Length: 272
Image (cartoon, rainbow, N blue to C red; front, side, top):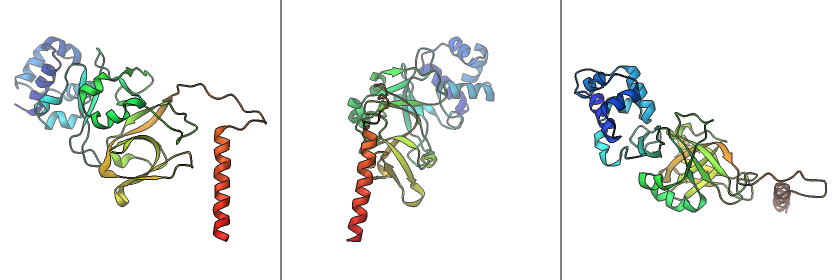
């Protein structure tokens, strides 16, 4: 029996579906599904592609890797252990992304509040931990992409305010991190939202920059990196500040003035 045949049977059983229900779900006849599971026939590309999209498992993994080896950590209840990458930069080895799905098997956007950051650093790969976090639906996002919403803390990324949620798209291949764009970085050091400089090809590091220039850049070694989520939108927990009149100064304007003063002081020191 080919790997794909055994994987189809494994996935169906892990989801607790009858052959008829699973066949209906992937759009084939029950008799065809039975033939696939018994190794009497091979599924067509359309069927493989449907299963791949439905359970967010790469086609390559479906047809080449025995998923039953992940039996203790794969697809239990409403939590899916999603084989989406690896420990290497390009994600070629197996790395597990825990996600939650609704009754229609559509992936949720899991919320990671500030108070859960420390626990998330340890439990990001634990399906039971992920299942206990709240989740939301954002119908304007791509249904075939994994997203997560992280609440940010501090003022290092002003004008994005503390308490806002950054919704990030999961980045499997870390070579795709683009310098100058913003990401939620999950590492051994914490969960942060930063503007990233990609220096992987040069020295296996990322430089994390704050938009608030009062905070210096931080160098992150690649071996401390666990997850990367590209910022795609934000959910603010506060309304925008009212427009400023000529007699008021915003916090961002004040910070700009302080930064300008610091630069002038630095220039003066160089001349002395």
